[in-house]
Length: 365
Image 1 (cartoon, rainbow, N blue to C red):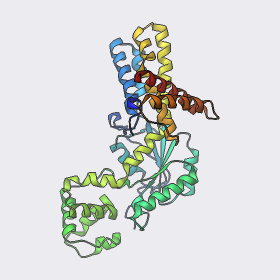
Image 2: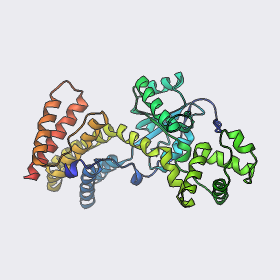
Image 3: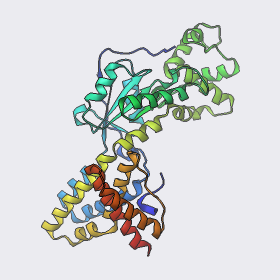
Image 4: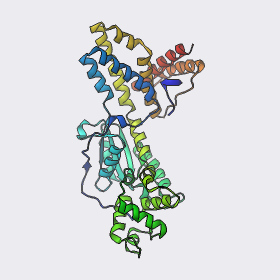
C-alpha cells in the first residue's frame, strides 16, 4: 500500500514486599518503539510541525505537543516479580515509564512463573489498556528448546485465562552492563566450564574464577544469561557484543511491540482529536494553509495509518497491497465492515481506512 501502511533455582531475591508501582523517568520519545504504520503518521506529524513553526500559533503548538507525547506506562505487580528490573529495561528500550501512575496511559502488569490471584485482581482492576509481562521466563523449566518455549506456552495460557495480551520476558538481560572483571570471568568460563546445574553448584564448585565474582555473574545474568554468554564467546563473539546478544534473549523487543500495539487506540484517538481541534482552529482563523492541510493527503493518510494500527492490534487483518485494485477493494471492504455490528471505535477506524484507501486510489491513477 505504499506510504500509508509500511511493512511491519532462582537466585533473584525480592527487594520488598507488597504491591509495587514503579516510579521512573519518562524515557525518550525519539527512541519509542518502531511500528509498521509510523511512516504514515509521521508524515502527518511532520507536516503539522512545519505549519506550527511557520504560523507561530500557540494553539497549533499545543495540539502538536499533545499529539506527539510519548504514551506513559505504569509498571505494576506483586513483590518479587521483578517490577524494578522490568521498568529499567523498558526505560532503556525507549518506553516512557510513568513517574506518577495516575498519569499513565497503559498498565504493564508484571507476573513471574504463574498467574496468581493477586495478579488477576490487579489486571481486573486496571481501567487502562493492559499488557501482562511474564518476567523471569528463563526460570520456566526445562524442555525441548529450553525454558523460553515453555514461557511462550505459559504466556498463551495466561492470556486465555485473563483475556489480556501476555508476553514473556527475561528483564535481567535487557540492559546488561558487564565490567572488565565480569568479562574476564566469562572468558575464563569458556576455557574451563563451571557447574551451572544450580546457583549453589555454580558458586560452590572448584573453579579459578573466585566465588565472589561468580556471585556477581549470577546477580548480573543468572544461569541462563551466563550460559548464553559463554556459548556466544565460545562461538567467536566479541565481548563487546555480549550486551546486544543477551538483549535479544531478553525478549524485550517483543514486550515493546505488545505495548506499542496496546497503545494503538490512544494514538488513533489523539490524531482524531487533533483533526477536530485543527478544523475548529481553521474555521476561526481562516488559515488557508491549515485548511489545505486538513483536506490534503497527509491528514487523510495519517488518520488511516493510525486506524490500521487499531484494527490490526485487535487481530483484524488489513490488505497491504499497493495497486489501484487493492485500494478499491480495501475501501469497499472497510465501508462494509463499518456498517456491520462493530463497536464505535472500529466503526470510526473503518471509515478512516476506507477514506484513506480512496485517497490512495486517486493518487495511483
